Length: 265
Length: 289
Image 1 (cartoon, rainbow over the protein chains, first blue to last red):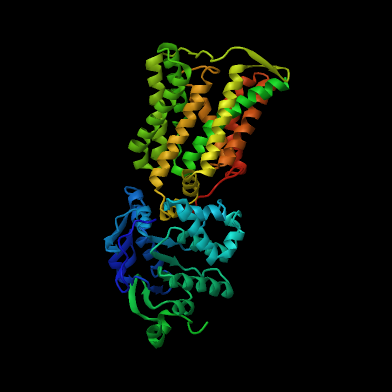
Image 2: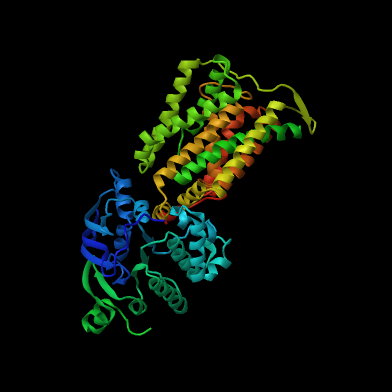
């Protein structure tokens, strides 16, 4: 089980990003980003391509700091991170990704990234790496199978051969095996047909209902807003707006500029 | 004649597989090309020689000590010198080849340039398929096969094995799932060195010890890695078998074949790089896609 301090009450900030800036050499990927996710919420992060949404999730998960530490001294090593990331009251912006996972913050990455040469079951077991008790692992497995029955069916199949939708479910299932407190999901609808998208996002809604806090990055704004309570709009590395789904959709200017050809699904 | 070829090939295949699997693991997981890998194999051989011939220790104990010594040496060198440099791939190549040379010179200093040999553990022969094979040979083959099976079991059935396989494919996401990549890489180096050490210790009675004995196996391991696909364990096993067999055929069938051994494996490497650089089962690292 991830080592976590006592559960926070609702409306207490589980994740706080304060003044986060990330630069790769001269390229500014994030510029003074501040946001928060309260325990139990499903928060959306939307915005045009290249706005920095994926960078934000990667930074929160610890991958950017990790990359910087690895590449120190090389030509590609000029990575600057400023600001703070606080999770459950603890600063995590200098922790390695596995340490952050241990605290209960897990990323479902862009493009899913299953371990292609491993079977579906091995992928799920990999997600349960931090879970010591084998019975707990079995329980987690049953929970995931309950959400995504297809994964039980395809248990022995090589994950690289799954369809896009199945891989997305596997990626989410794998992350759930870590027993997360906060799930950061990066663009789950990419490359999926509209029907599969709706299926996947419905599952994400179910997951949110079990009390797991979710930070959801999504291109498909209408689908995202159906799930989320609050949202942030990111554009050109900055936060340009914050509000509930209704507030943001009601604002004509925002809708046109950032939310694309949004509207009903 | 065929029997001789097979017998010769089988033993070589076993040794090459031990070395190639470790080499592949280190590349696939720790992302390093360790040119000192066969030098560790040599060090284990000399360790056994010293412990058995000079110090007079019983063979099983000597084997154990040799393996431990090699693993400790490899892990210490890895953590201190190689790990900090892992992102500078060229530096790692230079570092490891320098290390191999240092070990060569150390062996030269301590044991002299003479060819050394280690007495066999058992005496006697059996006759299989018309070929006389020593019991030493059979014992060695058995141990090598057992070691490879043990590695397979670790990889497939243990948590560490799962971490190794996951990290080999996508070290970023392995970290995100809570696996300490640095620790996994270090343990992989330990396992790989243990395999090299075991191979060196076990095979010492059958081969000759001399300070440059690491060179030929290194070119062969590189050829196997290229043929099988850098980072692929399946590729290492297949590659080892193919190259061992082909080499045996050359040695026995081609006039003056024994002198062609080194050129042969280098030739295969060049051919593969020209025709199909990713080898038989080449891998791609997910985080670099």
